[in-house]
Amino acid sequence: MSKTDNYVAVDTEPNGHGSPGNDDNGDENVERGNWDRRLDFILSSVGYAVGLGNVWRFPYLCYKNGGGAFLIPYTIMLFAAGIPLFVLEMGLGQFVSKGCVGVWAVAPLFKGIGFGMVVISTYVCIYYNMIIAYTLFYFFASFSKVVPWSDCDNYWNTETCVGHSKNGTNETTIGTIETLHENATRPSQEFWDRYVLGRSEGLHEMGRVRWQLCLCLLLAWIIVCLCLIKGVKSVGKVVYFTATFPYVVLFILLIRGVTLPGAGKGILFYMKPVFSRLGDAKVWKDAAVQIFYSLGPAWGGIHTLASYNKFHNNFRRDGITISLINCGTSVFAGFVIFSVVGFMAHDSGLPVDKVAESGPGLAFVVYPEALARMPGSTFFSLLFFFMLLTLGLDTMFVTMETVVTAVLDEGRYYIPNIYEKKLLITVICCSICFLLGLPMTTNGGIYILTLMDNYSAGFSLMLVAMMEAIIVSYVYGINRFLSDMSIMLRYEMGIYWKVCWMVLSPFIIGFIFIFFCVTYAPLTYQDYTYSPVGEFLGWMMVVAAVFPILVYMVYFLVQRAEGSILERLKYSMKASNEWAPALEKHRIEGGYQVIYQDNKVKVEQMDQAVNL
Image 1 (cartoon, rainbow, N blue to C red):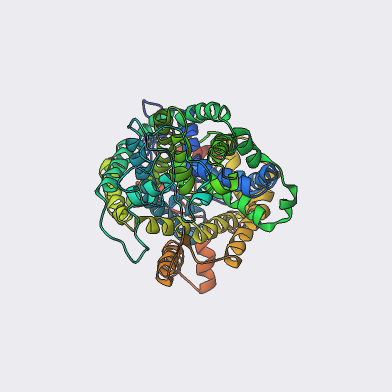
Image 2 (tube, one colour; image 1 turned 90 degrees about the horizontal axis):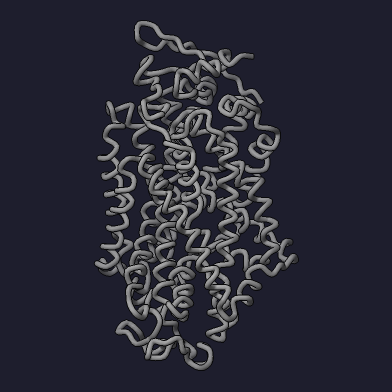
């Protein structure tokens, strides 16, 4: 059966606005633009995938779940779900040159999934840039002869603080924290809680806006906005520094870390294999979750990045390459982190498992304290927090570009020449996100950030990812999708991708989702347990991300489709006329049918039965 028997592609206008051709700079798509070179795309994708989670989450999970043995389920999950989903989303975005909303021309009834992705990405933009603001705060605070979290001689410290001697040297107090004081606190913990956050007792006590954090948040958004002014053209240049610099810093910190006393003990704790842990379902769940959150499928960013590729870019090769770089970075970062954590355990007299933490506590409490105990603490602190800054900005660039691209791709139906207004729309989107993030600069802001981190991209993200794999495989049809992908690649993809998209990936996501539901417990931050009101706010975030999916399904069936219920369902699950390559030359090459009549498009309706 030929493609003209299955697909009808349309343009808004022939040979021009709707069929953008090549420009003098080598762009295939004049209207949206393309990456200037493949390396721009690779580095942007690596920067998006490699983020703060690679530094503060993976090493801890690996150590906690069997050390080196954890790499077994981690690798299995990578090849069974991580890489397939990453490549799937790259193929969707590149084929139609659209972001996470426009790709759902593949099954219009489910276009609300794209809007759900935009909601999730907006959540992430709001709280993730707050983490970058914390990083900026620490970076500026590091410009001192003695870093301020190294001792207990500051006005924000309490009587329970136990740390360095008053002369600011690397000499530590004799004995362990536990033996000195039952309620002893670290100077780095008090700096974080009392000076940076001014932390209140809970979500019920928000307090006032802390002007230092507010200015850091404003600076973070200014940086993001400036780097997005020209879209992928500017991002593609910035990432040459932001995506590569972290590796330079990680290498420097590794060299410094392994030369410290106790480093070997930390690395041994990190990688010592405990194969008995492989029988624990939680270990496999943690491996799958880490792959999922690290690579970033279902956030919409992968669609966005790939949508600016040229049509015949080898997205399969790029997807595998980027995924392997991301996971290799996680393993490498573990050696860097635990060599220093081992030194801290040796220096403080505490066991490694009492020192290691996951999340913000590792980045803003444990690791800074270890850096403070090194000779040259100021230099290494500046280096570490600048690395965190570049890691965070890479992810922010793509996540914010996802939101902006979705606004542009959908707004083009209502606002003429909307792509020419991208600068204005970028500034508006960044300004709105900054204002929405201001509550996180208050005394209770960390509780909002923790709530958003746990609920904004949890259950809803799993649901979106599972639906994506199922819809492509069973609604549109896996064979038809593979055929579309072969047009771009100029060769067949193979049975591996078919098995993963149809069976393995949905099964793994379903397993994670069920495990989350079974093991659900009230959210906590340190010693604070969220109240039912806080839990309710978190679930409202989940509902807000899922709500567009249901609303759009109802809207499409009622307003866009005609006939009986079955006829409407059948029509709404067919690929729309926009599911086709963006350029006319590629549609002709792939055998897509376009009919023009009196400068208008005549659409010939054809049955598009699912071809499994």
